[in-house]
Image (cartoon, rainbow, N blue to C red; front, side):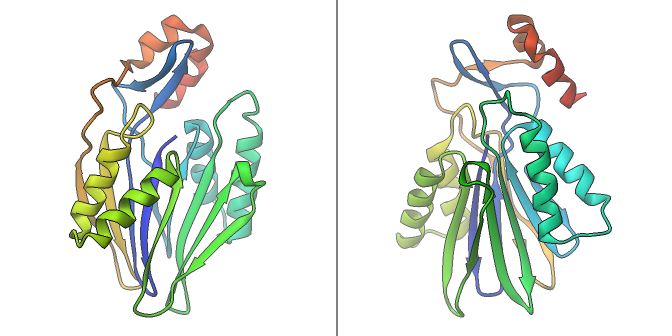
Amino acid sequence: MSCGVIIQGHDIFYIGADSALSVAMHDGIYRISDYNSEKIFLLPNKVIFMSGRSHVTNDTISEFKLQIDQSLDNLISIFKKYHNSQKSCFADSSLTICTFENGIAVSNIIESNSDFKIRETIVQPNNFKSVVCGSKNEEASKAINRYINQGLLLDHAFINTFNDVASAEIGGTLSVYKFTVQETRLYLKTKITDPKDLKKVTVKEAAMRNPSLIRWESVFK
């Protein structure tokens, strides 16, 4: 799991996510120390954030990129197919699509634990709203709103928020993209501060301790 934090205006997005990979072991959740994972995907006319098992994310995005049909319905169908194929996995999956309709910013969140229902957000002119998804979304939502209300600059609000919610599941590198009709560009990239009690393991160490992870390891090859 990972965390996605979006500041959405009427005609602009700032989309932030971490890069951590984690694995559940018998004695808790560990951060994979020797890999990072892409969580934000830049596609024509849309930016996508995904949280959940790496197989689901990678397979969903890879198949969708090859589709002639680039509709939201088709993306959700592919996402649902790959999530449901991983029924043995404990992790929920979430998909967030940021796009523009007639120049207006529209975000849609689809979560497996909400029966894949679409949660749409549109913001009125001269207003901004935080849209948070993935792991620790309630904590992250409270943090980003608190820092913005305190008057922090947007980059510091993002940095503080991800440092606050850092865990085995959330960490690594914070990347924030500015997305408008005219451009998509990297706005911020920085290291997230790890919590002091963080447990780490390499992919090979995890597979040695739990042979069932050997197939899971192949996603990084």
